[in-house]
Length: 417
Ligand code: HAM
Image 1 (cartoon, rainbow, N blue to C red):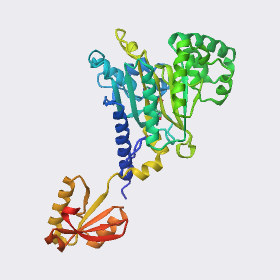
Image 2 (image 1 turned 90 degrees about the vertical axis):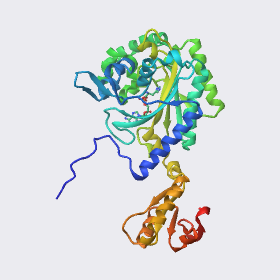
Image 3 (image 1 turned 135 degrees about the vertical axis):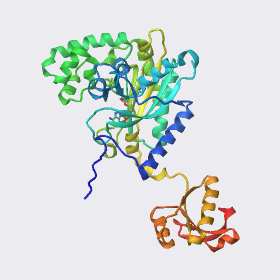
Image 4 (image 1 turned 120 degrees about the vertical axis):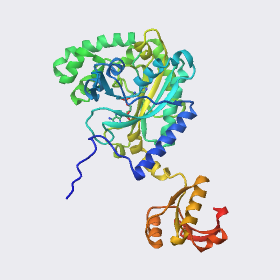
């Protein structure tokens, strides 16, 4: 007996039939919302030089340290599959000199696979889809408002109301340096109680300790200094403005003083939209994560400056959280199966199928070598909305239209279809 020997790589996912349709529905709707806010689509390569991510996400982060799919190409260049899209977007902007040409038009979105070698579980994969939003030349507080409102609009569209928006400000570099001095002092005192990972981070990049998932570390951190107490007046004012903006819209948010995000490029506002419906999401409940990254462009090219803010949404997690909405709505237009009553009517049926497709209808032309009754049963089973039966009525330009859901049948002229 032949055995199936191929299987997909652990942590990856196939989309087919209904899931394929649902995914397209999600992509289309995300795109519509992004375009409502005047963001434009971009596409970048699936692999990039490893250094790009080392320089942007940071060498002490889990993503760069442990999770990147890395390989040497035939000329021994260090290449990685992209683990996220912000770095690639900044590379795209710089390489194509967009800062010099399109000053006011650097608002981009993407819908792409990302790759991270993580332990797979519900809502966490090794290849996953991100819908990302990047807003460059985002100087004003209204950019922060727009980014948050765009994320909120997405959740609203997909009828996800059970979420909490967690916010924090990690301030400027200077603020962070003052804070990190005190945080390090505090942590050095309890160094031997910390997990191995955190002890290493204490030497390499203290802020990353706040990302720890170790329960004991989390307890110890409760008494650690909080960055919010180190913000200068301007940073405090900005956070207060954002809070006020959210309050006015009755958005469920909370300040999480330990939210620092797992990537090094952020400053000031950082945020995560966390789904509260644990039953559908499981342990991986952060649907959207983002923040400001005003210094990233400068970090890549010292001659350039452009403030920026953005977020990325985990598409698989959105699909888990919004499953009931997507199930109800992913079939956006009626579906028709055209069935000739006998072989004699194939040509007529085919012509009508083409005529209706040209009018924008979704037509399944059933050319299987089966009896009419079998085709009809199959159409009913496959959940078509209508079956169009082509038979002797065609000589008067008429067909039989069967409404599957209403269980009715009538003879109508083709023009009326
Ligand atoms: P991130 O927090 O690493 O941020 O990822 C954003 C979102 O991608 C997460 O909230 C989650 O929904 C989804 N995600 C991440 N890892 C996985 C995984 N292994 N499996 C499934 N979903 C996952 C970024 O990537 C930043 N580039 C976001 C950003 C854009 N900041 C500014 N602009």
